[in-house]
Length: 355
Ligand code: PHE
Image (cartoon, rainbow, N blue to C red; front, top):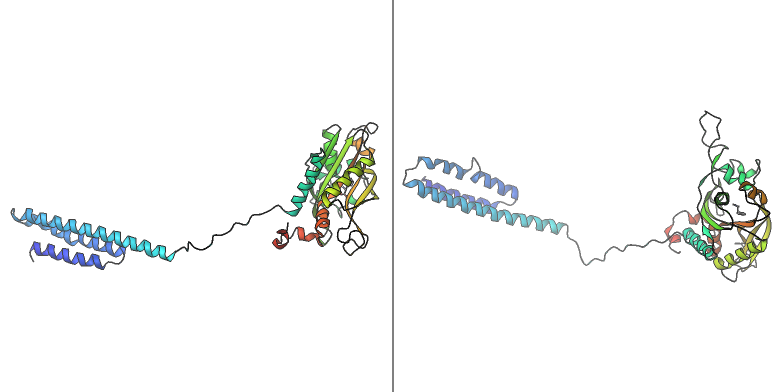
C-alpha cells in the first residue's frame, strides 16, 4: 500500500471510528490510536524520512492535512458528546419549575415568653426596672438573707436541688446533698442582690426560671418561671401593694376579673398574702377548674420584713416596701384555661401554634 493510500485509509477508518464513538472515553481511545505516540498516523509520519526528496513535501503536506482534519473532527465530536452527556444529566435531575415552592413557617415566641414580656411591659409602664439574677444561688441569697430559719423545710433536699455540698476544707465537694450552692427555688434572692447594690427608692421586677424537685404533673413543673417584684421607698404601705397588684391583674386578665387577698406566710414578708383572681371559666360561681371555689391563686406577696432590710443595711425606720412573686405558668394557665401545665413544656406544635 502506498503512503498516500495508507493516509486515505487512516482518514476513512478514523472518520468511522469517531462517528461510532458513543462516549468521551471511547472517543479518546480513537484519538490515541490515530494521533497518539504509537498511533497509526504518527507511525506514517515517522516513515517520511524514507521517501524521495520529491515525494517528501507532497506526502508531508497530505499527512498534515489529514492530521488537521482528524483533529478537528475529534474536537467536534468531543463537543457533541459532552453536550449530550450534560443533557442527559440535566434530564435525570429535572426540576419542575411549576411546583409551588417550600413555604417557610414563621416561628413565634413561646407562650411563656410572650406573657413574661407582657408582664415586663405592664411594670415598665409603672416605672419599674427589669433586673436579672443567677440561676445558681447560694443558700445565703435563696434562704438566709430572706429570713428563712436554718430549719425551714424548704431548705431540705426534698424541696431544693443542691449543686454541691459545703464540704469541709480540703475535701472534695459531693454532688447533691444539703449544701451551700443550689438551683434557686424562687426569684426572691434577686431582691437581696438588688438591695445590696442599690439604695432606695427601688422599683424593680425580675423575671426568671426557678427549680424545684417536683415531679411534673397537671399543676407542677420542676422548672418554671416567676416574676419577682420589689418596691422599697419611704412611706410604702399595704395599700400601695394592693393598688399595684389590682392594676396588674386587671391589665393581664381583663377588667372584669376580681381579686382577693388571702392571709398567708412567707419568711421574708410580714404581713404576707396570696392573691387569687376570680375564675374566668365560671366567672366566680364555682366550677371544676377552680375546684368549686370561684378563685384561682396566682401570686404571693407582702410587705418586706424588717429583718430582710437588716441583712442589706437598709433602715427599716426610714424605708418600707412590698414584694411579690408571680407564677408565669399559672398566669398562662388561668388566662387560657389550660388544664395541664405540662402542655407548656412538651413542645406539641398543635398546642403552641395557638398562641
Ligand atoms: N417567693 C415566693 C414563692 O416562691 C413568692 C413571693 C415573692 C412571696 C415575693 C412574697 C413576696 O412562693
